[in-house]
Image (cartoon, rainbow, N blue to C red):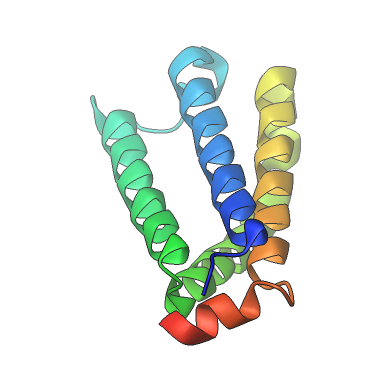
Length: 127
């Protein structure tokens, strides 16, 4: 079975969202100053995030149903704290807040694509 375009597009959106997060974390001191009191802590968190999302993206591309479910669960667990902290993100930096909204929207679109009717058969074959 050929990989649906929705799956490839969703994975690309996940990568773009991750890239936005890394760029903001690296270049927006207002956003990063409060994240980790431990030297190198933010770098460790960024590296772990890149590895985890990269692994999940790879597994989604291979048709692993559990990988798209993990993305969904991560999004659902993160959305409430995200909504609660969003005003603070905008207070710290309009750029950071805007980037955060863009990331969340990209992730949501990716999830919709992963669970779309045309993508379902791809995941059923690879469970």
